[in-house]
Image (cartoon, rainbow, N blue to C red):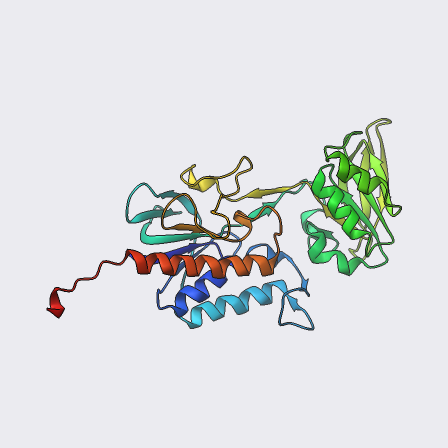
Length: 316
């Protein structure tokens, strides 16, 4: 039986593994279908401290993994099918039917960005298509950018991207926005923001060299296809927290994000902790995820110390 199992290997899970391993707790880290998390789909990472010249996302994740292994963390590939937190020890079943037992669990399964599923989208992720303005906006300085979406996150990303872009065109399939009034007003008052409403995205278009040159859309009013020209396409239609496998055994909010006690990583289940994007609806950055991974490991270590039962009979 393990003392601690970490589910997920993004910056949060790997940081938790480093701290747990250094505390001689020999954690098991279960890697999902995307070891390293969303950063493995990112090319240049320039806002993670300690790398003045930037670092490739996959390379950063590989460094963190090796660091955890160096201190004794064990890694297991596989997808968690279900968990049982109803009794002690906790039980985790991974694909194939194998069941693992552990005293504590750290959940760092992240949140997956929603995509449109249109041609050219996945092929160009990290090469002109992005889901994170804060991460990638800098690379589109003085270029034309498209933001797809009609909610608050789309308005926020559009406004943020005007710091870098020559123009930002907001594409939405309806002629009305879902965003709050104040967020709409901010975008409407921004001279760099242009509008392409009532248009359905059809395809991310590239030139003969494979470089993104725009977004093909259908004008829903005329049923005609159009090309909105841009060098970058940001998809801002939300995120889905990876929590379905928990089967409602851990408290989540209306959107599926794990609820933690403010200022901690404690969930409503004693001995189960959550860190990273799976419990973060606001920041969703690699550095904040890593910080919460540190918190989760320290909360976990403190819990294990407090729950230990010492046998003093041999000392008498």
